[in-house]
Length: 183
Image 1 (cartoon, rainbow, N blue to C red):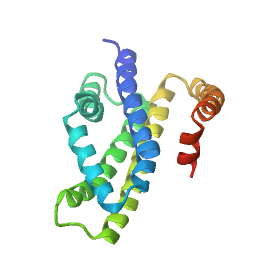
Image 2 (image 1 turned 180 degrees about the vertical axis):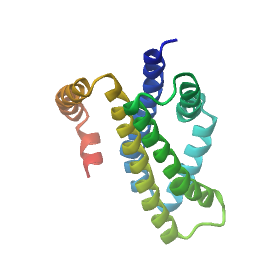
Image 3 (image 1 turned 180 degrees about the horizontal axis):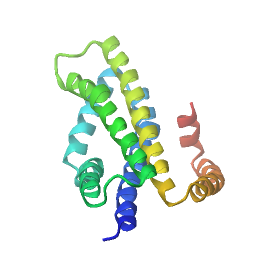
Image 4 (image 1 turned 45 degrees about the vertical axis):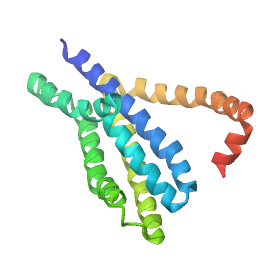
């Protein structure tokens, strides 16, 4: 397998992970913010158990580290954009372990029901989810720059332009949902 093919495969898995994390930080977090504190606690515990048992979620979360180790062994450290992207991914992953994991561990304890403490941990979880989603998205951009910075910038601009009509259509055909999410 060529180095470029390996980079595309790792980048693809990383982009899938970024999409999943953006969904959690953007969509699920808004739902979690609307839940009562004890409902939030129950929801997060169900979400955590379900995610840890889901093959896709576990694969997308762990495959980049395994693939990167194989990549570095096979190809070394000569593609700096790609390495920078992986470093940003690793920082985001570490932040999740430091910020989110203690929250999940605290919420799983049945005797932890103090509503104010749950609200504080929900805000901290929101921060952790947003940091992870945006650092992973940044890592995708950096990894993609390995194939050409101009191409990445153009792709981002075109994607943003294409997203506008889709966003408009989604709000037009689901007006109640759009108003509820927008607040």
